[in-house]
Each structure stands twice: as structure tokens, then as C-alpha cells.
Image: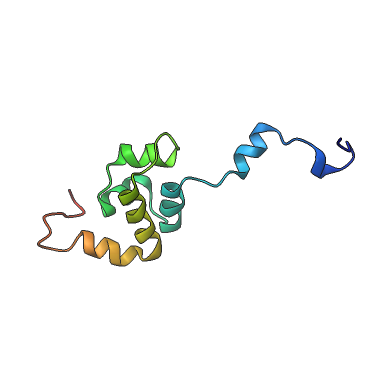
Length: 94
């Protein structure tokens, strides 16, 4: 039994529910970085299209990729420096 006058008893509209959902990990990490999708992909070596799919919830990162994203969230400068370290064969320009 519900009370129509009680706002907690009413069903929420789908658009309100969507707005309340927690964004995917990739989107949270990138937004926290302050970087555009293109810049984030370049700095951390993630293919831009894959990042877009993760951010839009079209696919989920594999466990190792999710761990990489959490490392970026925890210490973005250190991860960027490690990824772009000379002698690793990777650079931000690639």
C-alpha cells in the first residue's frame, strides 16, 4: 500500500532514475582528471573508441583495465609518468 501524498512512496520516472545512477568507472576517472576524452586516451594509452564505450556503459573494462583506471584515479601524475617513461617503448604521442 502506498500513500500518494508521501514523496518517498512514489515511483521515480526513468529519466530521474538514470540521473541517479553512478556513472561508469571510466567516466568518473576521466572527469576527475579534468582531461578531454582525446587527451585522457593519449596520456594513459587507452584507445579513444574503447574509452568511449567504457564511458557510455556499452562495455565494461576487463579487471586489469579497471585496476589501471583505479590507479589513475588514485595517482594520475604517477601513472602518467610511468606510462610515458622513456625506455618503455610507449610515449604520449603514440
